[in-house]
Image (cartoon, rainbow, N blue to C red; front, side):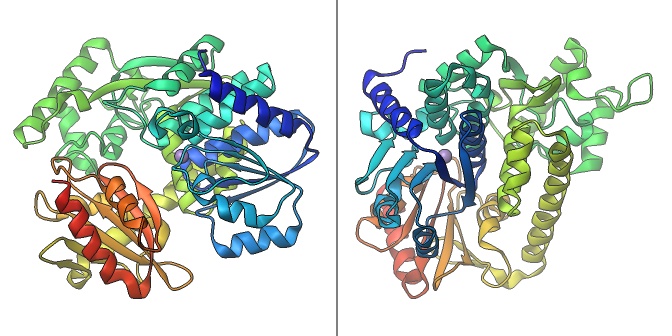
Length: 455
Ligand SMILES: [Mn+2]
């Protein structure tokens, strides 16, 4: 694998530091990338025989800093987190810290080693937090190359593909994972649960690509399949999965999906196909990397990150538990969506954008996903902004702009953070920020302006 020299040097320094550590306090982010990162660093640390204490958090808040400070930590390792809060990391006052992250930089690390692609002129979307953590782990010990599949799960979780293809270091990690045999890359229909679920369930659960009348619609999915003469069951009576379809059937299904989208005004045939990644790192069991990534995301949102981590470490019981967490997550999400749809007052059409006021109804961990789903409810081409209650008199604001909108949400939020006391970031079409309650309106004003000037 070609790792840029400067990055390689940082990794070397981090490994050297890590080798001196006996007890390690690990803190990682609660999204799929963060949970993948945590699984990688935990495996690597345990293999080295280190004593480990791990926490998963959704952001670095003052209470966390206080708590860690009180613990009197000697050795701190942050994964998929920390780069944007280096002054807080310094404040924890650990003797040594290692930060393995890919988020935007803010401040400088006082004691320890900071590894981040931005430090060597690389972009954040060419390697995930799990990717950086993996690069560290393989530098620490070659045998950690068997954790490469998890780095890919993290990159998928952070939506780092462009047109459903990896780039930069992510792509190199995929190649290495193929080489060592923890992952198999294929090409095909991007349906959810292609290895694990009945096809009609796969179709129902697939929302990207969106299939009108089929996504989130079980009977629609069943009808769709029978209109194609595809049997739902195999000869032995068990459910057919996408992976069980004949080549011809797959082709027919693909063209039917594209036709259905075109007829309903959804463009972009290329969105329907993409790389598929099959993980084979769970002794014998195969797992779809996209599905695992979705499940890890659910774990984080449901405050059950430990289940996700254990599943990533290959624990079979945890894998079963993971399925339950995912179900609970779907139920919660479904309930929240109905709450909004049955309660007209929650979604307000303003001049500049649609405002979903979820304060008191929608937990902060869910507001982003709820906004993503409800974006199809607002008028075409319009922006949706959601708010939910957070801690310390702050609200969590989530912003979603339609695909055909020129605005860049991540850049807008970054721009605002230069002169307002907010914390946040995001991607092109989706982002979020924590904003003081009484500065909410000021934030909305600034947001409207930023999104406008970019169009
Ligand atoms: Mn990340």
